[in-house]
Length: 81
Image (cartoon, rainbow, N blue to C red; front, side):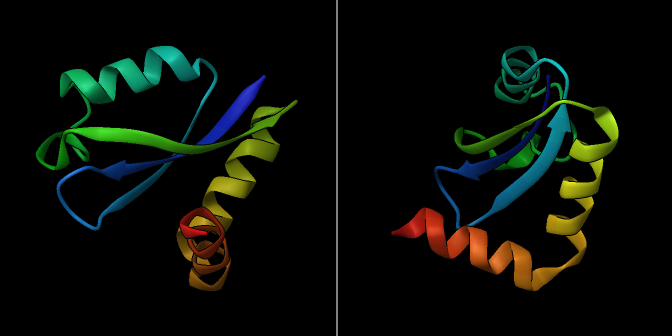
């Protein structure tokens, strides 16, 4: 399985969207500060993830959330309720 996930900073109103094959390992790397784009925003919570059968499907969804602010806005609105 491949995953698209959303992290939220516990201290700021900041979200990160990513994708990976191993969600546990990747989240652990974020928590340890081994991912440059999320390191200054720690501590983090994993607030959402979706599972896909193929890498290309996961990457397509990740890019959709990163580039289409409307899609991201809909997802974040869902997460807040």
